[in-house]
Image 1 (cartoon, rainbow, N blue to C red):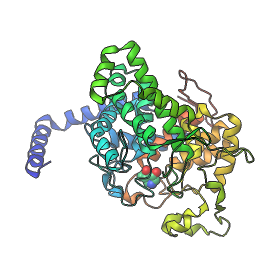
Image 2 (image 1 turned 60 degrees about the horizontal axis):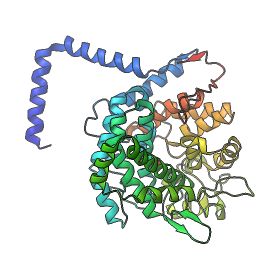
Image 3 (image 1 turned 180 degrees about the horizontal axis):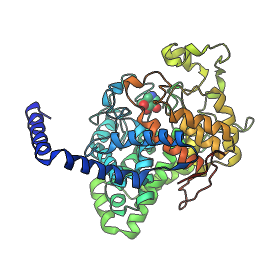
Length: 446
Ligand code: IFM
């Protein structure tokens, strides 16, 4: 916004404040906060300190998202200079689920914001030799702003993460208008990108996606990253089903969609075929899903020989050193098992968790919430609580030593996930279900 316009706006706000008076402003603020807590509080009985810290985390989400009109939620909210105000998947995967249930209007605004970036994402796809839309890993104005492609641009999963946020919101709200309009448009363009990015390999009849980086930034530019492939499959299926639903149930919306996107009749079949053939790497000997097709060929990182002061690894070792080993910055397969839990058996969840947990450093603040949710699900209650505490106190106790750069807003969303999807066992795969497993000293949670 030009400086003069900004100055005018400030003057007007000040004038309004002067005439409204302090009491009126305080009352308005109080009303807003009362509404916020009425819709989105999590109450824990029997653990007052945890309760206080939970509310602090939820309040950070309120601060970061309350006035996002036309903008997004930056990784640090408005609390610090870290990441220069840029948006990542933090907003879509970690903050949106809470907002979808507690502040659906804000969740909707954020999706509209992503939709406003669709033309940029179309241009980005073309620039990267792809059809459809490719969302930037890191952005502030719709254009890719990653400085280092291996741990940035190569995270194509951001595109499916946005679709995941859309799906969560639609499930929670039943907003058919958004589904039929901008939602469907997002689905078409993103499905196109995945179908074009991957390829059918004749030799094994599977659909593969090569040359991408998954959520774990200590393993980059790999083939068939499990998380990416599973999320791409989800994206492709959802797009095919939504277009089919519109065609049969909302022909006018379908027609508009065809006009806006140039959708061809064969495309939904192509997406469904790619999804059905999607390769999800699995190792039968270990009974686990390797993180990608070459992950198991690497040596395990020497954790025993790494002193605590050498963490986070990214600040103490060159990336090329880290990339050679089996070592995770953050949950990857474990996150896939959380977001797409219905596609993994309990046995797979246990085996995968047991494999990845000891080699996950948690150098990213986005990790412990996913680890907590899966630990709770497989009955590792003490571990679930430990990871929950890490998320809960990440900034209150400056666990990563960088809170001065700003609050880890995704981690605050993760606190809600660990509470509601971990301890309360909420799942929304088919309808809404709860399978609570509260820490023994908590009397109740609501
Ligand atoms: O989006 C995250 C990423 O997953 C890990 N590095 C920091 C980013 C911003 O929070």
